[in-house]
Length: 207
Ligand code: ZN
Image (spheres, rainbow, N blue to C red):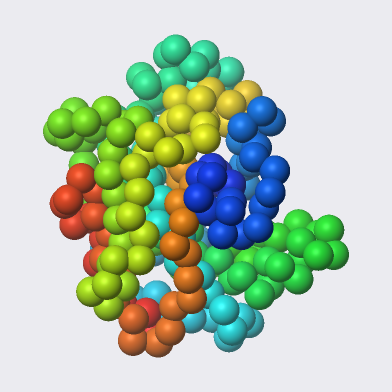
């Protein structure tokens, strides 16, 4: 399986990162993580030794359940049924350095444990559509990210359609759909809890 991620998909996050250009008129920013980046089942996240500034980014995650290529946006909703929240961990110091040099920033995003995954729930079990889901992150009991998927610049269906032009989507592939404002550093001992529509789907510690 592969992990497809979207960058710069919330205006609020782009502002806090001083990205002045809205990507709305352009295309979604995509990058991949290998399956070795996955961290599930509430396992602890260990801060790697190559960074001094790992940021959490809470995101809505969808799981692909059908094989698809060149999917039309109007049919994209048929390609995922389960959703969750996850954390796109980012070694921000490494990423900034690589960006400055114009180099690919994979190692700052795709390292072991950098894709934390919550428990999946059926989309149909939720009372709101995938385009209006509330999600939030508690760090040590304090709310640090709080947003709604309606704020996404590119919708889940647009992302699925766009990504499938380049990558054949396979059953079990996972898409991280971008983070809203409120990203920040994690430290050893931090407790992170992620919620979707008020339900806790993610709960783990930083070591
Ligand atoms: Zn992200």
